[in-house]
Picture 1 (cartoon, rainbow, N blue to C red):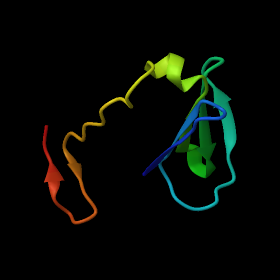
Picture 2 (cartoon, rainbow, N blue to C red):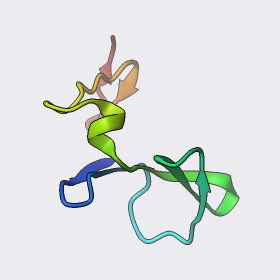
Picture 3 (tube, rainbow, N blue to C red):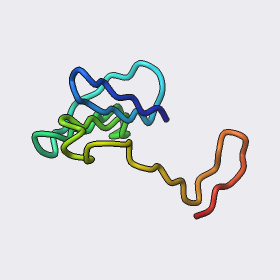
Picture 4 (cartoon, rainbow, N blue to C red):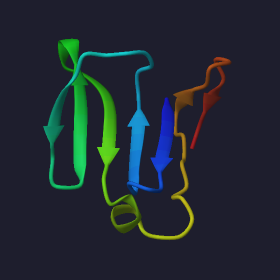
Length: 77
């Protein structure tokens, strides 16, 4: 997973699946869109006006709960 932010566009993108994917975009509202790939797999999430949607200042904390890391170690919350 990769999270990137473009300050010029004030857009945050959460990429869940690496590599180039053929996607269709499903808009949830004016700020949030989902990129859906083949087999209805969620590829990414785009958040426009991110500083307004997520709040200005520091980036929100990311907490992993019951997720296996790349090393295979479970992170429990």
